[in-house]
Image (cartoon, helix red, strand yellow):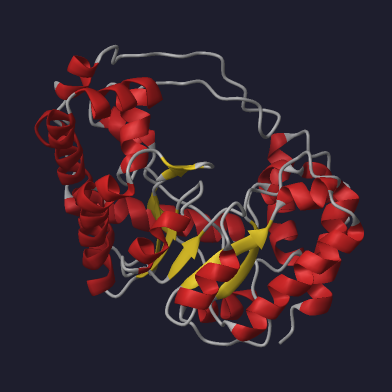
Amino acid sequence: MSYRDGFAALNLEFSPKIPRTEYSAAHCHWELVKRATGMELDLSIPENRPAATRAFLKAWDYGMMWSVLVHRDYLERAGAAVTDMGHAVFSGEDYNDKTSRPYLSPEDVYAVDPARQFARFSSGILAAEFEADYRRCIAAFGDDLVNMSGTYISLFSGLIDLFGWEALLLAMGDDPERFLRVVDSYAEWMEQFFDGFARSNVPVMMVHDDLCWTSGPVTSPEWYRRHIFPHLKRFIRKVREAGKLIYFTSDGLIEAFYSDIAGLGVNAVVMEPCNDIFRFAETYGDRVGFVGGMDCRTLTYGSKEEIRSCMERLMALGRRYPGFMLAVGNHLAVDVPVDRALYYNELYESMAYR
């Protein structure tokens, strides 16, 4: 009953089984998918993969499937010039060495006024597109887990996609006041997507915004508190007032912002294992759910004893806090050995029942 368990966690309600999700495994780690499902399909053939993914989600009892609709393609549809920073190998099929830099100086960044230069979409069209994406997720992943739609380029991540790191950081430091006008204008443009989601019939939204590096915030935490969190809080309030449930995801070390994120009004926070999930639980676990805990480095390089010890601590957390959902927070990627991943799942199944 993975949907029951996932939905219960999102509502801070205890269910018989601690729920779980994973990232990348069902779409990239095809050797693991074959071993976990027993399927004999040739998964090098793309047409065979959707059925294998669905079988894996069921075999591993996913409680929710992370998904968003609004990526950089919406910026391009709106007529924006976006930066391409390339992409390292992750899934084995996603290497990209093609780059583009439409913004070469801070002045190029300050000349951008998204609210007035980028095209807008009607609220009705956006609502319909979110609904179509939600139906696509149900068809692809099944209805026995929590499906969703949402936004990837919510605010800070959108600025990264637009300008790239070099131009973004130079503009932020060279003339902070002019840069803030760009931030506010982008937020004004981005708000339409939250209006559209609020109008849709999709019950769960994923709001993604990468606020930090693995080393922590990109700039002063107070800068975020003045110029990022107020916008995010306004966006999220609109969707919550429409009766939706919200996950918030940020990569990186977000510990400096635990209180700020908990104060956004979201139902659950998705975090990477560089963060102390136990500290988040102790302080905010009575009112905000949290997703993550396991580290792919432990699965890849740790001993079985270390994997078991980590799982024992995480499952104890799940028995104490109803909003906890287990995940390998930095992705169960293709380089995690299959036997280690299967052992991790065996431990989950043996420990997950409250």
